[in-house]
Length: 177
Image (cartoon, rainbow, N blue to C red; front, side, top):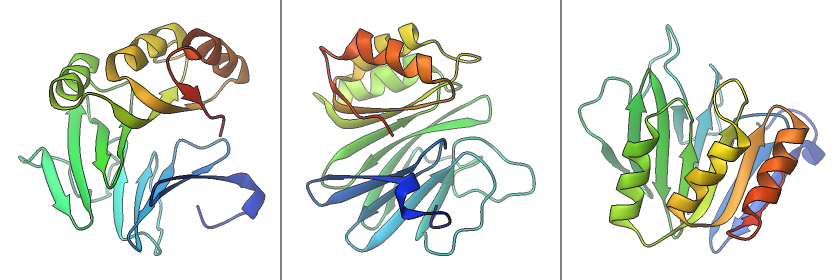
């Protein structure tokens, strides 16, 4: 994400955690305590990332969590809970805030029940909106289940963003990347 102009990257700072999102991308960077955790949707080589995770299984790319027996990783300074199904991944990343990176290809019930059971609410929900996999209407139901303070929808179609925003504005602050 360090390529391209600075204007293309949205920076969101909550407490001591910074979230960077490149416009038009499903990739995010989380910076905390001098370390950078990156979640990519495709195979990237990013030398500035301390930890690299992927939202899906990528052939010929070794992933930290793919096929792992563990569901929770303590990678200083991050605590990462992993949700996997259909060779896709969602992550709950904990720093001084809780960030849920939600991939709609992952079993929604597993993620929602874990978050609801373990936490009263999360701070940031990053959700992928792609009408081929998940509608804005269904995404709004997910949001109500995880009770996020801030929601960042990553989307393919601009009109999906507006539908999603209008459905959930009452429940969360929506930030457009």
